[in-house]
View 1 (cartoon, rainbow, N blue to C red):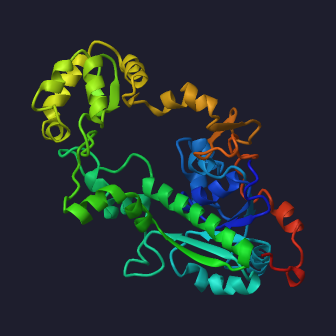
View 2 (view 1 turned 180 degrees about the vertical axis):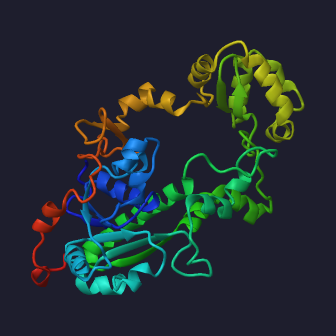
Amino acid sequence: MTDLLSGIRVLDLTNVLAGPYCAYQLALLGADVIKVEAPKGGDLARQLGGSERLNSAGMGASFLAQNAGKRSVVLDLKNPSDRERFLDLVASADALVENFRPGVMERLGLGFEALKAVRPGLVYCAISGFGQTGPMRDNPAYDQIIQGLSGIMSITGTPETAPLRVGYPVADTLGGLVGAFAIASALVRQKTSGEGAFLDVSMLECTLSALGWPVSNYLTAGIEPRPMGNENMTAAPSGAFRTGDGLLNIAANKQEQFVTLCRLIGRPDLTADSRFAEREARKLNRAALTLEIEAALTGASAAVWEETLTRAGVPAGRVLTIPQVLAEPQVLERQVTQDFSGVPDMDGPLTVLRGGFMVDGKAPLPTMPPPALGQHMDEVFGGLPPRANAKARA
């Protein structure tokens, strides 16, 4: 791990994806993330994944994906004695993240105001489907629901197949990233002024914000986004093209890139064709242009064309599967994954993903595997000072 958040303690009360992914980003940066789980089963993600054996052992693939580098304790927050132990833990913390429905923590007597009395300056992050206010605040929300409500599904797929769900929990992931960014920002203020913050993260709003380009096109130009499959409405040729072997993404968005592309595929005549000579004409005639380009690309594989076009400055890349991209030299050199051996219930080494950045040329990697449920009870609570004597840390 890098040490950017060394000395920061974060309490992770979250389940499944958005919240755990948020806290995982902080753990990768060196924060001491303590996962507070319910005694019976813990994080639901422990039961979610492709291996029934690991699910039964409480180490499902969904849990393994975003909980490395964390410590686990178990507390029943409905139990008075456990609530007191939790408040001892809060007194030692800098930040807390939860993704219960709005109002749950208040009903437990553990809302932001109550926790501030124990830990002045606490950064409290609540991640929910729709935020803490508004007519939909109490609605249950999973990634699928947010994808549909946000408009993402309406522009995913082709005109014939849309609306389609994006193939991974993109709304959950965006909520987690925004939460981590907001917590890190609030910690800066906490360390300079001692002031805490209540962060209200709405997955719907995070997803809408990430849809900035199509939303802006509608708000400013009145153009309603529509599904276009693998095409890019801003330019042509820009999309996925069939080759002699495999699909190839090409984004010849600039005029000079289009000219180079036509030369390299042996069709310089396309640049003089009135249907394709200029940017706007190409967008109007993208279907005809795609047919011409694909006919020329059949002479070689996607891998060959990728190398040829990229070397000449035309953005191009194969369309890969997950196993293929994990085996790519680029991914391997950048150490995108971390291996752990000797993890209970695993038949072999456990491999997890890190975050999407490096710090000072080094990959922020988790230093320990995802924890077993309640694995660190003695370690965490044995090191806590009595709350009456614990001073709030600025």
